[in-house]
Length: 97
Image (cartoon, rainbow, N blue to C red; front, top):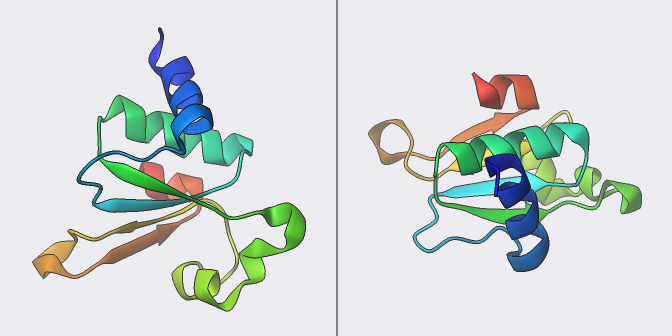
């Protein structure tokens, strides 16, 4: 199965969880969300998908705003960042870089 389809199938079937996940992936099925899901799959990185329902305003939840202060999707938290501190990135372009 092509990697993009594999990413989509795994997220839909298993919630995007991998053993030993170091990355929390805050996701909703939008084009930008799919870009990050596919990139994480292609890089074979361990991640856990955290759904943020933007239809119900989940992007305005105070806990999510600590990760993405401008309520932008998608977002990731890499728990193995520089010097062992968590690294937070939001917006698909920044994450892909």
